[in-house]
Length: 336
Image 1: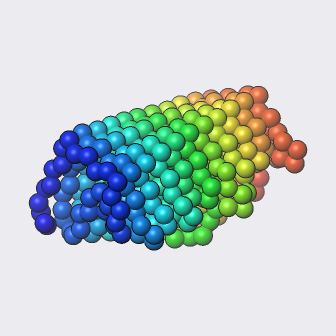
Image 2 (image 1 turned 90 degrees about the vertical axis):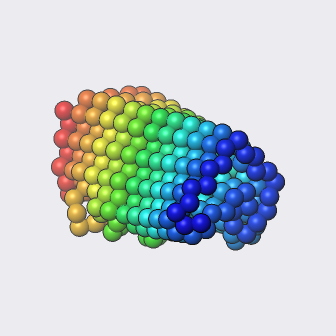
Image 3 (image 1 turned 120 degrees about the vertical axis):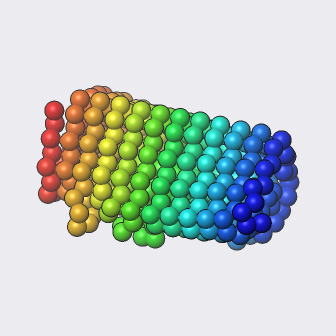
């Protein structure tokens, strides 16, 4: 009921099938939901429907998940295998929770988690995503305008994609390729993405090159920003551009972070300007080592600053551009 605060502790939801919210469905506006110390597993969202484990549908809702294990929930052609939040002005806080072994079928989104709408806030902290497989946004699919996404103290390991974005896919209605760890794609939104103390190990993109464009991170937002601090990406594999890829405009800052032992057909990190506003990218105190593909950093038409950045033992494949930093197009490059 509106304004009420359901509180589910110590619950187990198992083996349910439904069009939406097979394990639990909360529908309406301005509700509050708190789930803790619970297990949600082997629930199935039927064909073309969403939210196999927990579904929160409406606007102005606040949901919290703490110490919840989500395991082997499945959507066939819908969104949100473990969690679906749909509507505007919603908030979702996930703490100390695990998402394991979720799978989704062709053209599904958010094999583990999906959040869609405008002015939504999603925070994930002290959690684990592991061994999930999907078509788009295997771990998190975040679609809409003017959204905030924060991933803190979290591990994202051994996830894979056969379509677009594998681990996190943030989208705002423009057609684009996908990636296998993080995808953040839009042209006209105001959004903020923060990653702090995050590790991503052995994630991979198994899609064909014209569908899957990177194996780690893409950010494109005309009025948005991406902040990465103490983010370490290791052992990612992609059949297209490999580890960190940015398309579009905005502000990007990557600090005390590393990209190592990753392999793909093109670049380790790719930044491209594709709008009227300037793109300002700063990498400081970072390590790029033992990667294979094209150049370690590919920058096209942006303002790029590398400060105390080490590029070491990078292997260029045949046909790749450069081996260290490849800067082209209009913009300013500063190395210090």
